Length: 249
Length: 43
Length: 223
Image 1: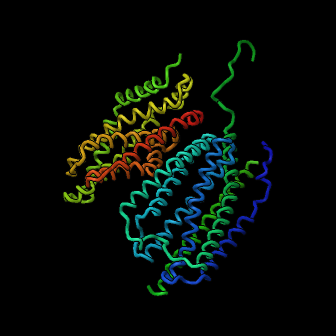
Image 2: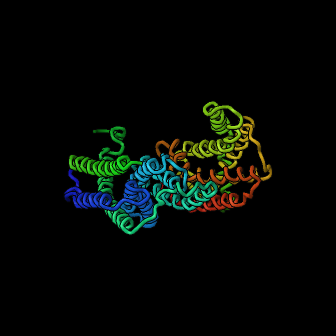
């Protein structure tokens, strides 16, 4: 049985996103090591050049997932669902990176792997919200149902988010540790700020690149699911037999 | 902290970052190829 | 003539509570499970009274958040797709179904909190200050958690691995409830004002109620 060839079958998978990603990664690397060391943090300040962009993208990914979720509920176009899910995947990556690099920063600068300040705690919570979202998507192969459930969860998460944020900030406000332990509290001079901006911009390029490929992947995986579903054969199969009428045959 | 030790931590942070990015990108590429193979095989 | 919204919601509440009366899942399974959790903790962290007194309230609320949500989960297994389709065909307002279920879960959660609360006071030798406020806090947290759990159960529905997925979804979003609950008890202990936390609980309950009503129909259409 031949089916019409969909564009994604014949089109060459574009490699420009990968090229862009490699270049962006390289630029970040070079900039981070060319930048002058900080007066107080010395070389450790370079960790910020990956920590801050990762954190930034973690939040951006979250925002995109939530926005795309709302747009799916409105427009019912599966493209928005693909964008939402892809952004969630990247979001898990960046959130995880933020936490791990944050721990490396904390251990090297302040001697502790973890502090319970508002930002770190919120990032950890966000990580688990992402995981729940992705886990939900694994519970069904019905594309529309999966899209709608995920979108509703996305919107619910957004609604709860201000409450989570405020409650954590107030909670930490009551137990304020000395400002020494606030991560990334360095006095930033111009070269540092510039390097940081470059790093954030390059990470954003990487985000876009990964999103392009992930959305492409999402479309392909949908086609695989549809293909599997249509391959199941006749609906009732051998279980249904035509009634035999009296007489011949 | 000695400068050498600092560079160790910086190296660790960057290694973690870039390994994660490369592995993630590779997984995307692999999954794309797998999906295309499956779709191509059915044609 | 179709019954009004409240009548519909109450019908759903009655149904869920009847189910609980027949199956006894909350009373015989979920509650004991929560109780066992409270029992395991001192075995793990040490039984010296000062430690237990300090952690008692916090542990109580953690158990409520993690185990109490199982009360909402049981609905996902009880409702088959066919049953839900039947309900939809009756023309019942899906928002009423949500509210009714949430109220039933709320009542069972209050029972859960009260029983485990008494157990906590006994096992952890907790000193309870501010007797008057405690019922209000228990009620508000139960309302918030039941709304959250019912919402999450509705989203997960009859999908695979609902049993652990609903708690996974609820847990991070229950943080405001957890913080408000523990901080208000802490405030009572220190004799400070807890109005901020009470207010936060009320806001949470309102926000979740609205979210539940808004998402009820889209969820029903998902099937």
